[in-house]
Image 1 (cartoon, rainbow, N blue to C red):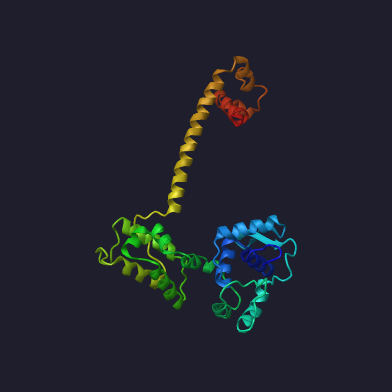
Image 2 (cartoon, rainbow, N blue to C red):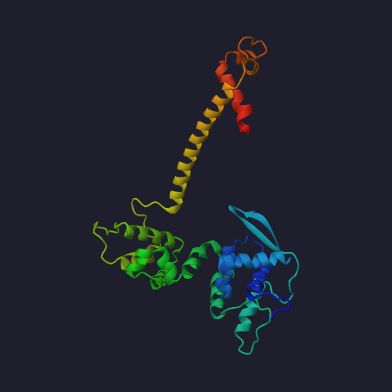
Length: 308
């Protein structure tokens, strides 16, 4: 047990931050924990653990950027425990310890998970992990049958499940094809099934959707966007555009109404003071050519409307 009451998750996170000074999003920490520590940790649990560490004064956070990437930069505010090793520095020693049958785990070991596959991953990646590249793959591997049936019910009804997902990832890795488009491909296939437009090259309805979708995704890592498909992001933007247009019309209608009300309440003296009509000598020559009605509306728009 940790004398400071730190959990395994918190110890591993502190180990990562000790050895990693780049921008860290919650999903990146979650991916490191999954891929290299053998610890399944959701983004939510990582966020909570880091918030608790910050409240205890172990971490400080500030916004940062690297190229086009923006996010949070974390650093240790104070040393939580000297027994917690730096993540990158601890990898080789952790692997060597794991290969010694008599080795005893340290109280503050930063590696809480299986190390047999860790050595292969580190050798293969040479300690250089592209977190953006593995993000989608990690999310695929963390799916289960319930999640798959929730997000893609029509595919699940046909028998498409985690067995197919696992085989798709394996096949794509064999030919070095990224898996970051698989999820969007599943959305496309689900929509095609739901709308009865999953057809083969001859335009005929697909007889076996499971084999059809699997074959396409396993070969190219992407299921083509079916005609008529609108993604949630596109729908959101379309709705936002419609809402913005409606809001603009409503604002314009209110402007007209408020202006008419304001104009009706002006006395002749007030009108003359705001937009002289009889004596325009006080106005610049260029403004004398502007109609009185336009000058009144411009005055309302500049001086009255902002307060409303």
